[in-house]
Amino acid sequence: MKDPFPRAASRLIGALLAALIAFLFFYRADELPRPHGDERAFLDVPYRFATFGDLRYPVFMSESFGSEELRPYPPITALALRSVAVKAMGFSAGHSRYVSGILVLLVVLSAGLWLRSRFLIPAPPLTLILAPLAMAPVVLIAARSTRLEQETFFFGALSALLLAAGGNAGLASRRLPLFAAGLLAALAAGMHPFGVVYGGLAVITLVAARRPKDLIRWALGAVAGSLPTVGWMYEKRDSLAAFAAANGAMYQAREKDLTSWLAGFTSVSWLKPLGLPETIMARLAAIQHSSFSDYLGFPVEPGPFAVLLRCLFWMEAAMVARFLYRHVRVRRVENDGVAWLALLGLGFLAFTFTYVPNTTYGLYGAFHIHLAFAAVCLAEAGDAPVWRRLPFAAVTAAFVAFGLLSASRLLASPPIPTLDDELTAMAGMARAAGIRPADTVMSSTEAWIAAGSRNTSLLERVQYGLGDGGHDALVYRRSYVDFYLGAGLPVEPARKEEARRARTAALSSILEGLTLSGLLILDEGQKDAVYYFRRGGSDGVAVASMDPARPRPLTRVPLDGEGVEGPRVACDTAPLPLCIFHER
Image 1 (cartoon, rainbow, N blue to C red):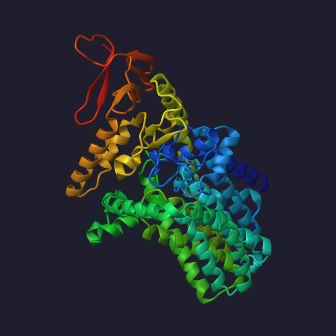
Image 2: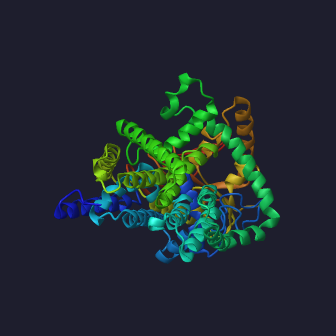
Image 3: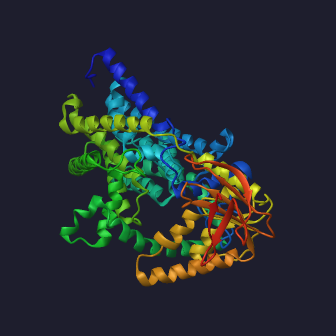
């Protein structure tokens, strides 16, 4: 393909776009986006591996299903690559985010290598083609946060590109690429249900292409890649069925609440006059997060750009679907690889629609639709300049503009405390509050770092009523309790009240015999704080604030009582402790 710009200008544009992508992936990645509750929870896995050398995940289903031996959730391969990388680098939330950025960037570069080898694209303008893949909002969020998706996406996307690496032959035919594609697809499938899509659609593609020998080679790799997951399932065989039943019941209940919540999103509210069922509205809202997604206004708040990117995304999906339909009718072998990527992108949208509706799985659909769209445009353009095709030019220009806007937002955003600042403060307060590393500490999903090697799950006890082990101390964040006693309750009034009573009673019973020993203030209004309780007497409450507007060094103050003056902590204990620090 001919370069659309003079050589010097092309190199300059390519270098600037490459720098922009790197900037968006890594600049202030430890600060933005602000951490999600899931990110705080999943960090416990690499933390435990790096600090204690074990494979537990005690903030979720810990006591009931034996995670003291080998965790039942997430699967044993999930977060394994991250755990090894973070241990080598030294544990920190920031390092974990850098690992995410590297994994996503490697996929983007691999997609670029595939596009270049398949369509003979000069290197400098290749960055323009990669702009929608790298600068999609959900891709930027994935590159700068910690979840299960980054590793699942990494292994799965590489498996897809290997299968498509047949050049003019369409799909791969050599033994090693096929074996590696099957192995990586099986690893992705063992990490998360969305990873199963890579392997399932690969089998369909090879069968439809009538390539039984290649299917066997791919399947041999898949068998090898499935061994860690099969071994884990065998090891957990006694408790895995019970865990699966409990997890299934949780998602069944959660689906009702998520459906009511998502069906009210503005991205689908304009469809209400059509009279669509609430469940359809919710699933359409989930798919919309492939076209545009933000978290607390990062990378850009919803607005005109969100509408533009959503419209362009659905145009891309329509063109990909049209190409796939035409390919099925009149097959050209050299386009089998492009058709496979088109099937994968559309397959992820379909799977997102059928899965439990949620806002966290847009990465797969976003990336693979953008990749398939680029490949489709290049395939249909042939020897003609693809840059002159209006849909392609519009998508590229929109995402370059979006990348520049996101970069300007990053530059202008004021400094904020990082998750590492928060974790360090929580761990330090635990020691100041008299909680010893050898204590058995029950913790919420955000506060696990305040425990030592022996901690159990407050989530399990409060939300699910599971587990009955003893504990020496309790650490939880107020936002956690506020959510599970408020916004996190079922939507239906009868179920909501019943769940609130059960959860309040569970937390009250857990607090019996414990004394407040620490209070870490997270915001100036004290609407969010971390509470530390332990057994035995207390010579006061350790108090500190990490609110940047009003930081406070560690101070020990008495609990409120008659005649107490000066700095103190007062608690309203009905129905649960709500404690406030008084300066005077």
